[in-house]
Image (cartoon, rainbow, N blue to C red; front, side, top):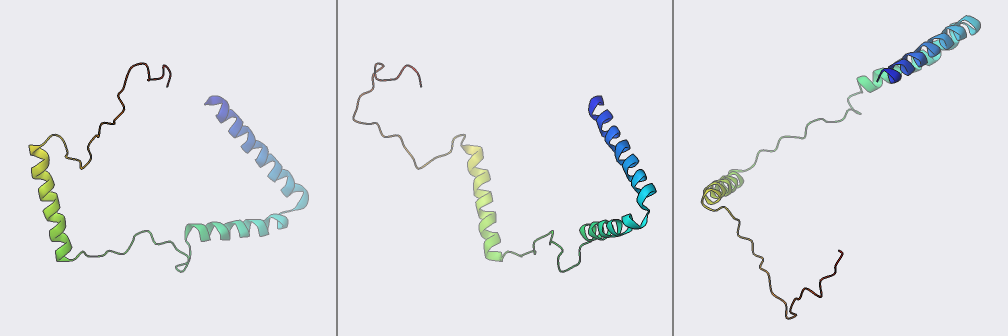
Length: 110
């Protein structure tokens, strides 16, 4: 971690020296336009106009009474059935094939 911090601050110091050298030799007027453009882009990113702003929340839709009755009935049925049974009943079952299995047919590596 210390090595990364040393590299980071070295790059920051070199960037600061480069900016100061450029200001000294070319003047401040060359940096005004890029700073204004950067500031406008940053402000638009931070506070976008309303027509471009993303909606953070979806509209709230109130479910009907019929739907809520179904949801409540299902949740009540789950609670009572889950406490009485430890295993779920699935509609699948294993069907044994016609071919007999032997240990010789099983590959050694799989």
